[in-house]
Length: 245
Length: 80
Image (cartoon, rainbow over all chains, first blue to last red; front, side, top):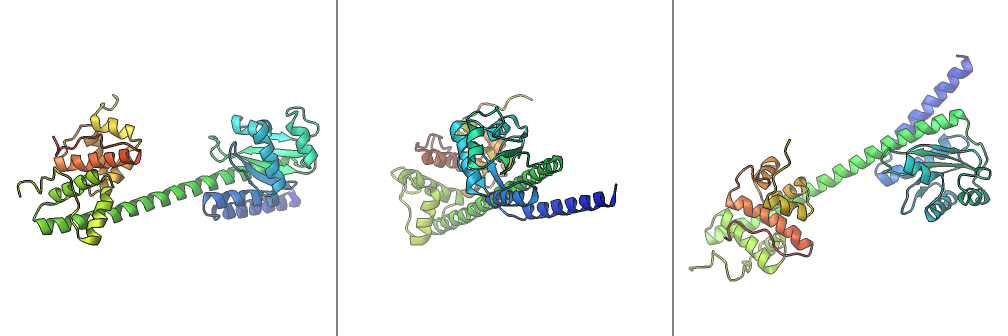
C-alpha cells in the first residue's frame, strides 16, 4: 500500500463513520429517509440527485428532478428502480440514453437531464424501497463510488431499521401508558360504586359493563361519566344490583 | 407441535382481528388481573377463568366488535 492509498483509505473510513453517525442520529423514519437522500449526494462522488424509491405514494428525494423521474417510473411501471425493488438486486445504468432495457423510461430520463443511475436495494424485504443515485453525466460512478454506494445503502438500511424499531417502541409505550390511565379511571369508578352501594369490585365492574352494553358506549366512557358527575350509570332492565331492592 | 385448540374466545379474537398482545392490553385496560400468559391459556381453554375474569375478557372482545360496527357477540359468564 502506498502512502496515497493509505490516505485514501483513511479518508474513506472517516467519511463513512461520519455518515453512519449522521444516519443513526437522524431520529424517526421520515427524518432518516431525508438524511439518507441528502447525505447520498455529498458522500457518493458523481451523484447529483438521490431518492428513496417506493412502488406507491411519494418517494423521498433530494431534488424535484429525481422525484419526477421516480414518478415517471411509478406511472409507466418501468425502470431500474422497479427492477431493483422486485429483484432485490442492484442495477447500474451507465447511460440511460444508450441502454435499451427501458425503451420508454430511458430516453425520457435522459431528456430530463439524468444520464446515469446506480440503484441499490435498501432491504431484502423492500420495506424501505430502493436507493436511487442519479447523475447528470454518463458513467458517473467508478468502481470505488459503486462500492461506497453499497456500504452507504447498508448503513442506510440499518439506520432505517433502527428508527422503525424505535418508533414501534414509542408506540407501544404510548399504548401502555394510555391503558394504565384508563385502568386507573375504571378502578376509581368501581371504588365509588363499591363504597356507595356496599358491593364487591366484581359487582361494580358488572354494573359498568352492563351500562357500557346498554348505552352502547365504551366502559371507559361510562367510568369517566361516573367519576365526573357522580351519577350512577343506567344499566337497563336487567341490573342484578337493582333487582330485589 | 399440534395446532392450538379451536375455542370460542380464540375464534372471537381472530374475528376481531386482535393479536394475543392486543387483546391482553385491552383486557388489562379494563382492569383484568391475570398475566398475558394466563390470558392466552384462558383463550385456548387450557386454564379456567373466574366468571369475572371471563367477563372482562369477553367485554374486551365485545368492545372491539362494537368498534368494527358489530354488537356484543361474545356471551358473558354472568349472563347465562
